[in-house]
Length: 346
Ligand code: GLU
Image 1 (cartoon, helix red, strand yellow):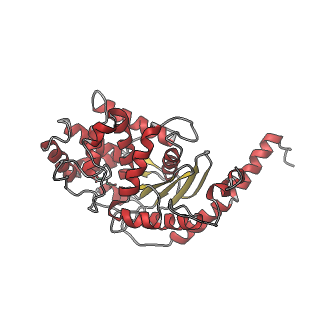
Image 2 (tube, rainbow, N blue to C red; image 1 turned 180 degrees about the vertical axis):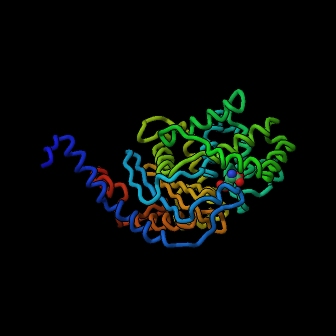
């Protein structure tokens, strides 16, 4: 015979059972089941270590601004953050140098070009935005610190504040990027030639390769999204990851430039600030409400996770998440998780 539960333990158990059976969890399970069999796309192999990923991995997580989470599939599988690091490094550069100094070195215009294109603005010599490699290397240059280890330490501490736990660099991927990143080295040196970055270019490239090689999970990406949705404060730890004034800077460039050269298609269909990476991760943000983390390694021709994009399109459609949605009468995603916060109940 089981021992009777105390009031608090019983409440917690009932809460957990209710969460387990929530309509949002059911929707996520359904969407996961819908996209798991999709075998389109190709796992990135231009960084040799990335080719080792299992193409079947597929994780899906949602974290709300009040810290509740729903996770399905391979949400605990680690992978390298890759370009999803770029908006966060942009944020650190903004905090370290201020908006004016950062914008002198990197623009905020979408390019329509591939992420690794070797192209600078003809008039200003600035890279177009912080989401393409040139702009990301220029923003990495602006991360402060007395030497490379200090800058890496500050970068890792910043990621840790977003995800709510210490993070680590995957050494295999880092070494693989470092030894094959000739194009990124060329971009760095071209910008040095134009005076857009400082002469610590080799350190900055090293910082860039390490920021791309930080290990995260789909749940971690949902935490990053929830932190940005929550004005820069991690909703579980209560720790500030980004000064409130810069949250809009990150969300704006994610909205216009976050999904490689299909940013327009993404905004049209999903309508949320987001960023994807060649490791197969995507973070999407519903400002004031929640973050979505997705992970599945096979990528489409633009470099975005096929299952991740599909799942996000479906999630946005079912819950009316597009920022320009009006008159949506379907279920309220936050209310689905926490009925007390449902639409219209104050
Ligand atoms: N480390 C990768 C590179 O610079 C990042 C690519 C990405 O995720 O877009 O090639």
